[in-house]
Image (cartoon, rainbow over all chains, first blue to last red; front, top):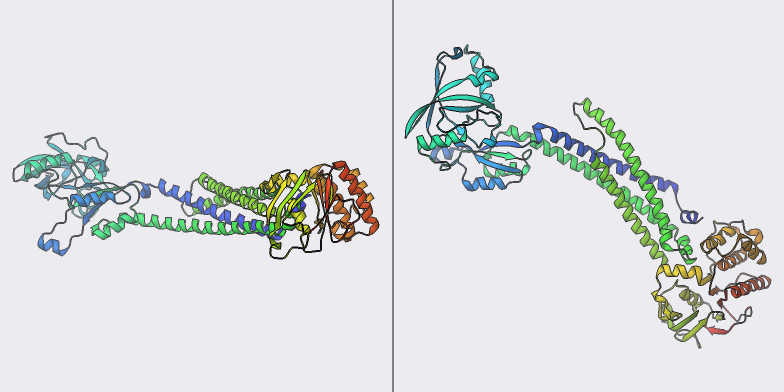
Length: 398
Length: 213
């Protein structure tokens, strides 16, 4: 009987529209959140994009440097500054060789004719090297020097050079068998080593020897102590795809890196922007629809103010009367939430099918986070609505 | 229970000159078990007097004491409790729910206080001559019938004071007398007092005090 009085001014069509709006808004927001979490998970599971990334950067070579011998090296301050940029985990300079290197090869081995070439070495700290090999070490004074060359060099040789020149192609697995004489000549003497390729690198586009060897050789043959000269290139480890901060920092300081490696990060951050906008739009629509529901509940109370006031005058407790409204709306919202989750489940399954048709593999099921956010929002709304209903009731009772 | 008015003046009346002998801004005591009449021309604050006692209006200067306790200190829940157990108010504008039947209107109160049995409800209605209308929506009843339903509703609770705001304004002499008889009887059962407002002299009850507003 009391509920009949409290809800006698209920307009079912308005309530229906308000519920529909809340349902729609909630579904849209949860869908976009679900999509957001799915894509984030998919992207972070993808080794191309979200694993630590390595960038080798150098300063732009310009005419002034060439003509007047300006510095293209990185000072210690510049390296310290680089470490502070958002997303950068570690920075290390590439150590160059300051002595002359000649490599001679062949002379009978695997039919490769004898050849010799001038070369250079560079070195990075071992934890920046992407080749896992037990041979990647140089015990003091060992006569064998392990070498890593870029995978691209092998490709260049195999497909660009060997075939056309009638030389045998070298399979990747055989690279380790390639040995050459490494003749080092510096102002403090010279020495012959045996160079051995122990791996191919995708990360660093240079000819690497262990840092311990290069530091030793630089000091012994060229008289250059470790750290005495500025490096021309540095390698950076980022904890994910390069951030926009980093890209901006590079261009502001005239640093260069291979543009290809930044492409993924741009794509990724663009995707994130799109997702953020989607979540934002979902939030705005949900807030608007909650607002309309909120207004509906206020309107119903003000339409029923005669009934409410009279009941209070007859001795009904305003809080208990308010709780009748509160419980009613809470039931509605719980139902809206549950229906949303069910609809979300179907939407997700449909979208997963759609995405896998396009070659995208999304994780199974609903994201706990999306469901949790939905619950949090429902709870927040219920709380705000309940408090405002009770406040309105107190006003009518006074 | 004792209701004391000390220097009370409703704020809306503070600009107009008070009538000679007016109760405002004086010391007045209403006792339980006594009947009090407040008579005045309309617009001088009869309903306001009852509304101040009932806690509906709080826009007044001075203090109102219930057994020595300032009624401004009552919380909203206290007021609800008092309206279920100590004060019953017959509103001048009746305040019935027109969509509910006459019986349901009475039950809205009775279910809150569990005072009358449904036989008693029927009996009270019969004594006022409105038994046959109990199952009709209140909106369909005449004002006189509605007023009698409102009287039954006002009696469907325990009380120490019955506040009657022009209770017989829509009743003829005979129906008024029947209502008076019932009200007297129920007041006696409750050992309750009564404050009645009227536009002019009233002869229905024996009043201990007559005040002019």
